[in-house]
Image (cartoon, rainbow, N blue to C red; front, side):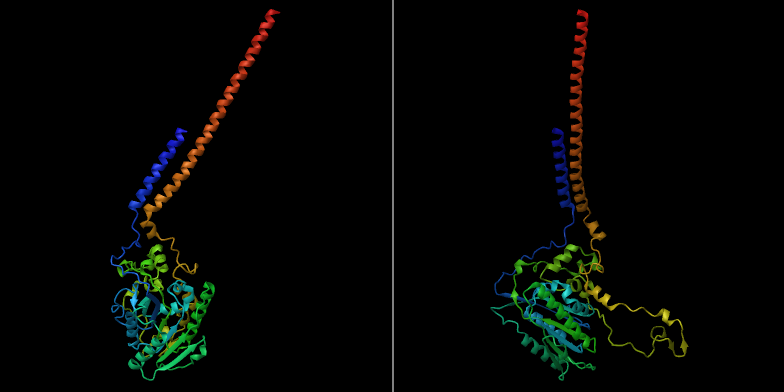
Length: 425
């Protein structure tokens, strides 16, 4: 019994020491940001609404003109100024305004419901996401989509073309946008149906609306477009109940490869209310820079074509090996899935984040401590089991010896008594 208690005491000391050591030595998690000291006092009158914008062409200086990281909330005036600065550039042939009633920031966490919009966003040179446009309903007027539509139309007519053609789309009617082949400026207002409060039906509606957005964008004869996604659904904004006042993820903290980010940071940002599609906006280091991702012209110049790429025969030169050198055509559907399956949406295409040697290296002490702790528990039970087995074997042998001694003594007495009887006779 004393031996068993001694083993338990020793194991408890080792386990306690290992746990304390792992806490002291393990690296500090990157999510444990310092909370800002000066938090704004929470008010019941604060409301917020999400929105985002993306444009095929680059809007130079847009990132630098932002008052702060878009992971922080913006005022209505700040959001409006940023959107207007994109419209004033007149860099697109078509402007598509999606108005989605009842949308909330949490709806953007399900990437599958926005697969097509995310694909077009990933191909754009300009992305602007505003997770929280905050207004004080006691001091400011509520957001009205009709006013936003009028403001967008006014800016485009002044800065781009007074002959702007406008299409209004209702009830998911694709025919409201006719086929056309010119590149005159178009403004397309799309009023999407209301969303259900039932979660399953809501997801089905958002998925259907995303398919409809793909159908509209495919009808446009030009790839130079600007998409704005708006809502006037204001929900209570409670900054002290969320992580909105934690320091945002900055450019310097990001690795060159987003896959090297710890899973905890990815999940924390995805589940927060301060980012829309963080894999495309927050984790991609190139999105913090002004980079033109699309060529200026819609087609390459054919003044001096490269016969190896464009034709079998060129300027009297005949080449019979052009078919073997022809570049393979990529599967667009697979590329589309890869573009929005950033993590854990499609197990076949998404990378395996559990095999991340950098994470293993950073948390080596903690992992070793856990493994050591588990092995100690197993070893403890094994030692106790062996001790009990040996004790039982020892007790059995002792009992057998005692029984054997008693039996031997009785036989000797019988023999002695028998010899005494024979002598008497």
